[in-house]
Picture 1: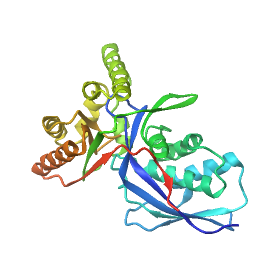
Picture 2 (picture 1 turned 180 degrees about the vertical axis):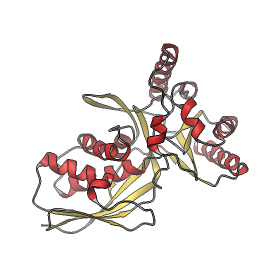
Picture 3 (picture 1 turned 45 degrees about the vertical axis):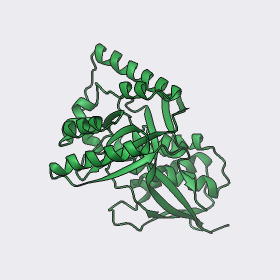
Picture 4 (picture 1 turned 60 degrees about the vertical axis):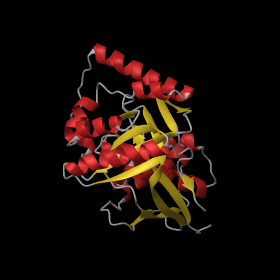
Length: 310
């Protein structure tokens, strides 16, 4: 048995992307989690937390452990166990795919150690089980871009059908994370059970427009399509100063702005790094005016997703 550890980098992601609730997501270059992983003789999953974040180390309570166990069950693998050391740099509950990064890292690492029996696309179904444990919903709009990189469309969940979408090279994201808590469970609880047909039609048009804009490299179409008339109106109420921050992003050149995942982070898509940096600092300043501490990330779209570093 080769017990030499490997290191895996798993990046943050933005899910929903305004109009694409549970079906659209894209991958960031940073922040990202790193884990060290190795095979051990005992047939157990041992998780060691090396960060200051309070995260569970019991495998059945950690998205990393749940996803890894689902992967091992599919392989019917019982020959050895795994020791995993977590160096988490994505704050839990930030809205940029913290639980998804852990889930993606565990299955990529195990797959590598056991001979790369599956493609990254095949691994999505196992990482989704970690999301189910974390939020009560086995959605893939974070784990799919975390694994595959780039812009991802979940065309169908039954059967799982994942489509990678091309995007213009100069597309950047400005992300601001206000230091407040929005629990995923609460963010899902406020969602309406029924959607008026006129809102559904608007949303379908925006999803189609966003996909077309990404394919064509049409920044104006991308901007026009980054509108959410179903989820954002209710979830934005959980984020103080949201309307003012979004207005500031658009005034400073953002193509569009919305909530990242279930929040509280807010993302803005921009044309070029310079505009993205301007937008990020403007959004940050608007939060500071409301005495809300925050941190910012500016990133191009990450085309690689989760990778083994060594």
